[in-house]
Amino acid sequence: MAQLIDGKKISAELLDNVALEVADFKKMHGIAPSLAVVLVGDDPASQVYVRNKIQRANQVGIRSIEHRLAADVTQSELNDLVDELNWNPEVHGILVQLPLPAHLNEEDIVNAIDPCKDVDGFHPLNVAALALGNPKLVPCTPQGSMMMLTQTLGDLTGKHAVVIGRSDIVGKPMAALLLQSNCTVTMVHSRTRDIEALCRQADILVAAVGKPELVKASWVKPGATVIDVGINVTLIDGVRKLVGDVDFADVEKVAGAITPVPGGVGPMTIANLLQNTLKAAHVQMFK
Ligand code: NAD
Image (cartoon, rainbow, N blue to C red; front, side, top):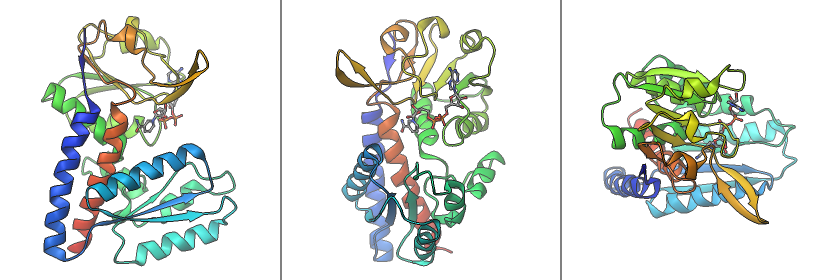
C-alpha cells in the first residue's frame, strides 16, 4: 500500500512557521502583513474558498481585508479597486478570486495587479520570472505540490515527472518548478496520444485535469509518487462527495506514495497563499 502524503499535517507545519515569521514581522515593522481579498458576485464555491482563506489568514496573524462586489460590477469599477489596493501601502497582497463573472476580462484584472502584491503568482511578470528560473511569487497550488514532493522524496534530480493538464494556474507552473528541480518533465493533456503509456513512465505523476478519478492503477508505474491536484464534486448514491483526478482506491495499491482528496494538495494551497503574502510584505518593506 502507498504511503499517504498528508497535506493537512504538512500544511499545519508550514502555517506554524508562517505564524512565527508573521510575529517577527510585526515586531520589526509595527504592522501586520495584510492581504486584500476581492470577491465578485455570489458563486458558492468562491465564497467557501474566500472564507477559508480569510479564516486561515487571521489564524496566523495576517490582516485580511475583504472586498465584496456585486456580480454586475463593471470592469472599470473593478480596475479602480485594484488600482487603489496597488497604491495602498497598508496592503501587501492582493487576491482577486477567480473565476470572475463572464462580462469581466480576467486577463485585464490579473495584469492590473502590482506584480509585487500578486500573491497568486498569475501576473505575466511573475510567470516570466518562473519560466526564466528566477521565481518571485509562484502560484500557490504548484508550490504546495512541490513541498509535498520534496518532503516525500528529498532531491528530485533526474526523476521523470509527468504532469497531466496544461493550465496556466497549475499544469504549466508545476512543470516549470519540476524542471527547476532538475526533473525530466513531460506534459500531457487532452490532445495527447496514448496518455496512459506516457504516465506509466513517470516516477512522479501530477494530475491537474478536473476529471473525477481519471487516473487508474494501470496508468501508474509501481512505486511512483502521485500528486492529485483535482477537486471534483460528485454525487455518490445521492450524497455529495469530493474526489480527485486519481482513482485513489485503485492507485494506492501500486503507487509508492499518494496524496488524498480531500486533505492533500488543497490545504497546501492556502498555506502557500499566506506564505506568499508574508514574502510580498517583506519585499515591500525593503522597496
Ligand atoms: P483547467 O480546466 O484549466 O485545465 C485542465 C487541463 O486538463 C487542460 O489543460 C486540459 O488539456 C487537460 N485535460 C482535460 N481533459 C483531459 C483528459 N481527458 N486527459 C488529459 N488531460 C486532460 O483546470 P485547472 O484549473 O488546471 O484545475 C485542474 C483540477 O485541479 C480541477 O479539478 C481543479 O478544481 C483542481 N484545482 C485544485 C486546486 C487545489 O488547491 N487543490 C487548485 C487549483 C485547481
